[in-house]
Image (cartoon, rainbow, N blue to C red; front, side, top):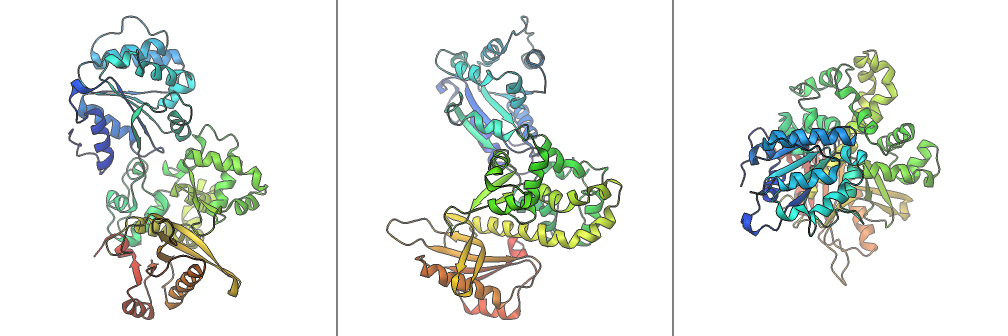
Length: 493
């Protein structure tokens, strides 16, 4: 196995997947030709950093494409081949029909990575490139004589996702499909050097798990303690002189499929404001429901939002913004942009801090609690959830609805009612009391009446501000009640 460089924080699984692809367990003589890998992920997740490290560790070639014409890209590609092989490409490439066979034949001796980063830039100028690669990797192509491990990488999720889908030329060709995700919340806290769970939640609600925001975008500035959080927000995220200030805008502007930024910002603002259903979003932006279907699909293809089904109501779903910084921008910054641009961050932050806690941190905390439940901590529900999300339970007798923030379901068993492992409620700013537990118990009863198996259902209260003595006493007397505070959320004993 190729050793992971010390400068790479975590990314253990990603490194394992890459090195297994580059240096397969079988002998080189058993390989049947070049291999294809596709690496994707949202911007700023460290894909290039990871692949550059792989090229150095495995003795491979790394080429980062730029926005250029086909002719210029071919010249730059030839220069990269010359630097790597130390053999001058004597005949200029006329097009990629020349370049791809040439470079594949240059990698004959042993499996080494041949990395093409920012691949969508090349496709934009040369739409036939995926087909050319498919041909060269197929029977009779130059890839049959090559040991190259060709890795295509890009951040344009709609483009990269389409490389291997449907009738795409490269469908079925890839031996590696790696999506580099943001760090999960515990990893992010460690990466930021934050040991206070409350501070970790608040920073994560803004910066999420995007590695670039820790050093490149804040110059290494992290809040030293909870008392430093407000000052950190003012001097980094709300500071027009810092790159983090405009980052949320750039994330949207960089997506080529977004043709009407005003509409897309309004859709994102609707979701950030708590209007997460199709109808709620349409009402917020002043359009009919069928008029926002396309922007929602585009945002989902770009991996900026995700559609999460209601686990108790078939056909119903809620939309959630994937990147916390976009939620922060839409809920906090966008409405006060003019003031922030003239360096009135302190005044703005004082007036919106409560909105941040209620509208940004609160929903974000619910998401972290679902992540915690998904990890299936030993003893939490008795078994690992097969499906996890949220759901709404109708309560006709009280003419209301009960929103369940964390729902854990067991796998469906043929001929048996669906078992509910857990129903959970998450509160960031309120001390949770007995009435929160009673709401969950009421939801459990209603779901039992609908045919669910609730005999072993655990009622879980996730509290950011702690629990009342009465609730603690109730949990102590009932094996089917769990209290999860932020210390447990972050694994702090």
